[in-house]
Length: 121
Image (spheres, rainbow, N blue to C red):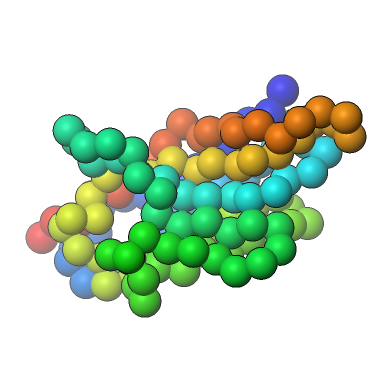
């Protein structure tokens, strides 16, 4: 069993900051990429930021220079520092990890339950 648990969402005023955290636990052999997605009401889920086990990060254009993704491989955690938040950033944010549970298993995606981020005055 693998679990991803997000935390850190909430209500913040425009221009404010939030830091999301996601902890992966359970039967994990190796994690490749860890990512944050978001889904606003009536819209499709979109990739916000991703960080592979090696290599460079990538971001949704609208969050570049405002959001920063990072990870702690020793703790199987990924973070999303969100600064200069805007009302259009309001969404449910989901953590995603592409991981394998054993040496012989293939990589597959796992998802957290989501955390609400609301940006409003």
